[in-house]
Structures are given as C-alpha cells and as structure tokens.
Image 1 (cartoon, rainbow, N blue to C red):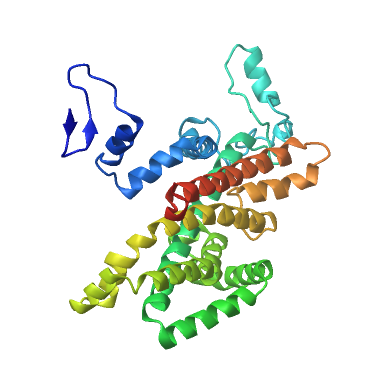
Image 2: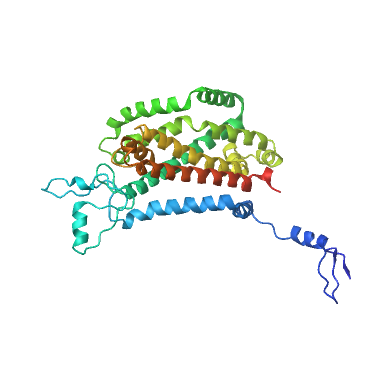
Length: 352
C-alpha cells in the first residue's frame, strides 16, 4: 500500500521494515533542534574535546572547593608559635615529610595531615599554594577573556555595521596595535600601570585584589581586543546586507537594535569559539607575567610565580618547578583542545 501524503511504502499486513530511502526521509522530517543543542551533541561526540572539558571542570571544581576543607592556608608559615623561635624544620620539606613538631605529634599517637607536595622555602604547604595558584590563573583567564569579548564585540559591531569613517578610524587603530610587539608592550604597560595604580587604590576595596592583577586586566583591555573586534567586524560585514537586516531597517529599527537582535546572534558561533581560545592565551600571559614578577602580589600565589620561586632551588627541589609547569600545561592544552572541539561543533561551515 502506498501512502501518497508521505510517500512511504509500508506493507501494513506484513509490517515490512522501512527501506533506506524511507529511513532518510523519516530522519529528515524529525522535529528540528536549536543551534545550541545541535552544537552540544556534536561536541560530546568529539572524545578529545569531551575529555578536555572533564579535565577543565575537575580542575576548576578542585581549585574552588579544596581550600574549604584543607587544613593548611596558602600564606601561613608552619612551625611558628608565638613567643617561640621559628621551627626551620618545616622549610623545604619533600612530599609527605613532616616537621619536628609534627613528628612529635605522630609519635604521641596524634594524626597529622600530610604535606602532599611538601613545603616551600618559607615553610608553607605547597599543595594548597598550587591549588590557589590554579584558582588565580583560571580566574584571571576567565575575566580577561570576558573583558576582551565585551570590548571586541562593541568595537567590532560599530565598525562592521556603520562602516564609513568609523570603520576606517577603528581599523587604523587596530592596525597600529597589531604592529606593536606584544610581549614588550605587555611588560611595559604592566610595569607603568603597577606603579601608577598604587596611590589610587591604596586603602580601597581594590587594594585586596592587588595592583598587578588590575594592571593585567587593563593590559588586556588595551591590547587584546583587536583580534575579536576584527573577527566580529568581518562577520557583520557579511551579514548586514541580508534580507532580514534590510527588512528591519525598512521597518525603522535602530542600528543598535539590529546589531543586538539580528547580527550578534548570528555571530554566536564565532564568539563562542574565539572566547574559548582566548582563555588559554590569557592564562599563559598571566603566568608569564607572574614568572617575571609582574603578576599577582605576594604572598598570593600564581602558577607562574610558583615556577619562578622554584628556580632558586631547582637542583635540590625540582618537583616545585615541575608541578606548576605540569598544571599550566594541562590547563592550557585542555582549553585549546576544547576550543578546537567547539569550533568543529559550532561552526556552521563545518557542519556535515
């Protein structure tokens, strides 16, 4: 029996299985999913991206919750008792070693929480410092990427939609910034801003964050938005002549409304991919500056500052350099692989 409405050849009496042509037709007629859901499905089919996402989530959750129950603080020196001399036996402990006081407690039958990664030269638990350093690096990378995203979206949208003199001026500024040596400008700006901001934020809430972190965010706001702006501009230039944009203009819609409601939603795949790839770049930049002493303020740790401090005892305590280096490598590699997976999943041009 032939159903003319759906063009499916089904033997009702024998319930014969559908042919390959019918199966393809049924799949094609299924209810459509949203762009986001479709991209997420493709993302989770990518095993490399999925493993990278799990690693990033695990590291992030660990950096947030481990300090809550960990018995040691990132800035407290062990073996210090008021009115008593400093117990130097806590300095430079190897993994799972104990200071003299802790050994006495163990001999007395008390339980002492181990120092998994040992201690640093100041007698501070190294594991919790690595955890805090990971938290700082992830936070800086995330917020720096958000700053770059906001500035890049705003400037790129204006240049791409309005064009004319605004586009020419913005693109010349972008060209000038692109011509500057990145690392040299980052180091110079960080040094200058660090000195300039100290008297302005001293005694305020921002003083707890530290001048180095604020200057780092300002560096990203001044230099690193250009790639995002150029990308968004190119997307909007290709979309602004579409029929739905012309229809919105004919209806009297303002340019800001058209950008917000029509153009940016159609650039969402590019935004997601670029932001995901910007985060590891921001983390690497923060670690690099912290390694040079221009990152977070002491005693707050960063993975870069931990690696820098470890250079002094690299021959005697190589694990203090290897551990933060491995953590940085895992984070940056996982974020890059996740970014590649997001590109494959959300780029419409790659959709099969």
